[in-house]
Amino acid sequence: MEDGTGRSGYVDLLRAGAIVLVVLGHWLITALVRGPDGALTAPELMVTVPWTQWLTLGFQIMPVFFLAGGYAAAGSWGRCRAGGGTAAGWIRGRALRLLLPTAAYLLPTLGGLAVAGACGADPVLLGMVGWALAMQFWFLPVYLVISALTPWLAALHRRWGLGSVAALAAAGAAVDLLVLGADTEGAHRVGLLNYLLVWAVAYQLGFAWREGGLAARPAFAAALTTGGAAGYAALVGFGPFPVSLVLVSGEEVSNTDPPSLAMLAWLFAQCGLCLLLAPYAERALRARRRAGRLVAPLGRAGMSLYLWHMVPVLAVGAAFYLTDLAPEPEVGSALWWAWRPVWVLLLAALLGGLLAALRPVDGLLLRLARHLRPQDRAAGAGRAVALLAGLAVAGWALARWAVQGLAHDGAPDRPVLLAFAVGTALVAGAAARWARPGPGGADGTADAGAQPDGAGEQVG
Image 1 (cartoon, rainbow, N blue to C red):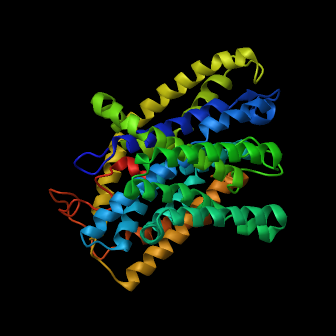
Image 2: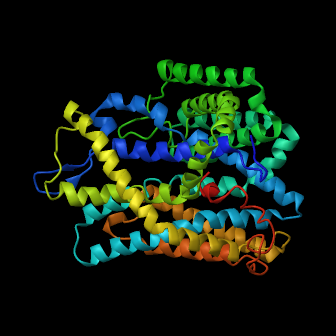
């Protein structure tokens, strides 16, 4: 179901719901404990309480993120092509919608870590804080690259249809089998390709959903759901794969580092379920338009919600745990679980206030992205090279932060920060000329490539 601007209320709902579940999942598994020396530690809940690994079947919702992102990108890129736009212009516009909010997040967080280090804060504590502030960063370089590949993935879909989904899935399965069969550093490096191949499967299914009407084929959606769930069960029950769909310390095989065959199977199950529910959800949204209007604010705040959601955890830890104001029952005990709703509600209230304070910043970033975005018909080898170099350098910096946190060894890594700044500047400066604000968008047009899918598409 799409409105007159090409938006789908159901896709908006999927993206908003995925963001909320990611946030709730991170909050739920975060356990803070004050040690005998007064230092704050964060024991890993899924190691301390192993049964909680089953919760990841509901909270590992990234397949839905990429499915909805592919659906929205298919429409956005299609409108751009229809208007005579270029791939470079579209890619640059999408990249800026990810890089600029990330830069706004990094400015205070890295600055605060640097100041704390200069004031003599414990490097180990700063390393833990820096890791918590970047635990969500793994998604950013992956989505940046897959978004940049959208024009070619769209061409692949036009040529092969669902065969392109099968080809990506087969490639991802082959890579994972290679990693399992050859436990070497070289095989592990090849395995990193699955960060793109596996998540691109869901993204490509989004293309097929929009262009091929998969939601109108309930038999296909049901087969995808049941086949994916059965495949996951078999791979976990009889294969070497763990139950957990997120990384757990001590596992010899991980389902997410890089994405595994079991993750691919669960991806098909989740995407199939989304397709199966689509007709019913769309009818419900048509009948209850107020519910659809409630989804829109979450979409607009999506990138900020995703980036900033661990900041309240650190604030609550400092304010309540370091001061002995919060109760500290044994992690995983009945009393600990009884306090979880209070914990989540407190974090939600703090995050709500933080997002309200960030609204002017979000508006400024949106205007800046529109002002910087290129004319869609702009082309040129030099600008394309600058764009490619900027994406590569910024993506590398985001990947480094995802692996080592924002304060590796207790201090921000200046070369990584410089790389991100240079990469973002190259992407921002790759336009033929900056757009002038106009009545229809940044350049007086309909803002192809970013609108009308909206600011919520920054993360999905």
